[in-house]
Amino acid sequence: MKQLSIFIENKQGTLLTVLNVLKSASIQIIASTISDTQDFGIYRIICDDPERAFIVLGEQGVSVTLTEVFAIQLEDKPGEAARVLALFAEADINIAYMYSFLLSGKGILVFRTSDTEKTKQLIADKSLKEFC
Image 1 (cartoon, rainbow, N blue to C red):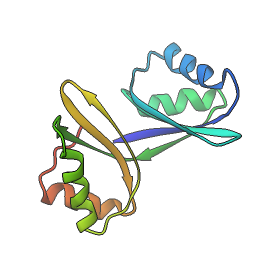
Image 2: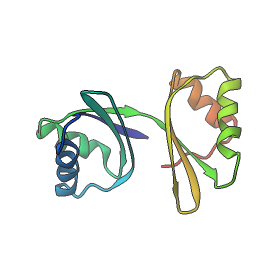
Image 3: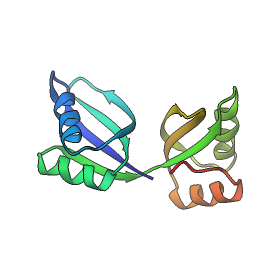
């Protein structure tokens, strides 16, 4: 899965500018998270057309990167995230960052790891259901 990471200045109106660019391009945001520091924020987005979003944001001078992340679908019940993350810990795969959301009664974990190939193999070996 592809994720946009948008670097935005931590001042009034910059997030709205990004959202308006995506709105004008009819790009639907599925999930997002923002982390900030004193001067800037990183706005991470999963959307319906990440490649096109990358292009339109870049054309507007927005600093954006396109990154491969993983998204795993979970049953919406207590302990599921812990169960799945334990598999990664047992395999010595570090989770660099993660966020989650509910969609149609399913939990979705979006994350980036220290080892993409090892992560792909673990997902296949453990028959984890990827969210597409």
